[in-house]
Structure formats: C-alpha cells, structure tokens
Image (cartoon, rainbow, N blue to C red; front, side, top):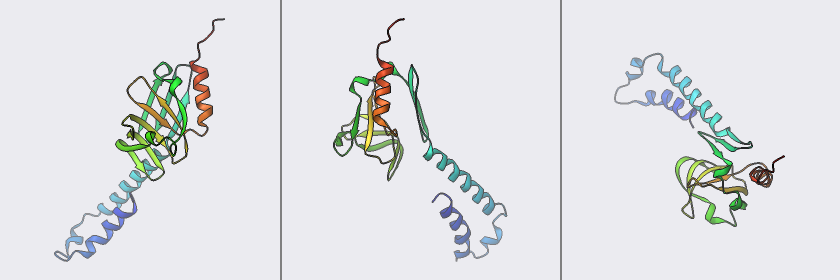
Length: 166
C-alpha cells in the first residue's frame, strides 16, 4: 500500500487526465523516480518499525522497544505483585479498545491504547493469546507478548526479590 498505490497512481493518473492532456508533458523528469525512491524508503522504514519488538531485562530495569516506541522502566516502578500472564479471551477488560497514539493492524498492536477497563497501556502484541500484563506506578500498564510470558514474569519476580547481603 505504501509503495504500490502511490507509484501506480503517479504513473496512471496523468494518462487519464481529460481536462489537460498535455499536463503529462509538463511533469518534471524527476517526479516518477523521486516518488519511487521516496515510497521505497517509506516502505522500508515501516517494515523495520513493524518488525521492531524487543524486551530486555537487567538488574534495575525493563526496556521495551516496539515499532516507534521505546521505554525503560525501573523495576521499582513495576507492580510485579499484580503482574499476570493473561488470556484476553478470558480477561476482556484488558483488551486494547481505543488507540490513542500507536499502530493497530489486524494481529498487530503497538503503542499507546486505552483498554476496555479505561486504563492506559503501552501495548506490544502480535495477535497471540497469552500476554503479560504489567501494571506500573506511572499511571499506565504494559500489555506485552513475549515469546514465553511466564518465564519473563518469573525472571521479573526473581530480579525484584529482596537481595540478601553477602
């Protein structure tokens, strides 16, 4: 859609002009190749963004990168005791309902959404059933789809456990 439709329109529409059939003769030579290059770059950037899903953990924080969004959240700001692995067919209140600043395609959601329960959430899902719900102390939650959500939750609980000296 990003590449094909603009290029076809650019090539086909001038030939269909009835009001001024000579308009195609006045089109600068760089317009068609420039549009092709611009559309190819835009398509490549969108492809990169839609494939960008990364979740990493360290001793102090969780870092999330999804499409055009990136967030680093201190473990202290996560409500790990309230975190759950959920199935959205059972927990419909956690389904993303309204996109406020993000990308929503069939089987893909990335960015800021309002959930059905009215909560604000940073969402990174690709259409799977088992998701990780992580509330934060920052006024929003995280609805994520890691490959192994229970393993991520177990690791978060391990990292958040009080550290014993020595």
